[in-house]
Image (tube, rainbow, N blue to C red; front, side):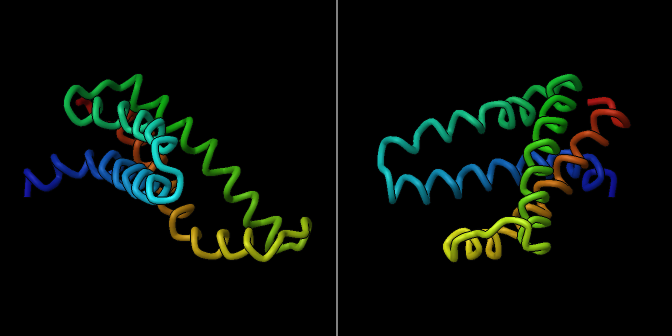
Length: 119
């Protein structure tokens, strides 16, 4: 049981790495070489897996909470019909709902890890 609880602190990094990998493969099929800068977003998460830092962990958590809050606002605007979205954007909002909830949850988990646990 100790080993499982010790490895749970790496779940948010693996989640964000999997999302970055998914985005890269999707954009690589559509755009080609332009998709490679997406891989640069994974460097801080890989760094956290091999050499964890509380400061980097906290800053990554804050950055992704802020980015996820914009997505939550987009959902609220869609639900309240404040903005008129096109059908394509509404489909994207519908299908990426799980991703938004996962981003908020994992970024809050990263902030909690940086405050509570010593790496």
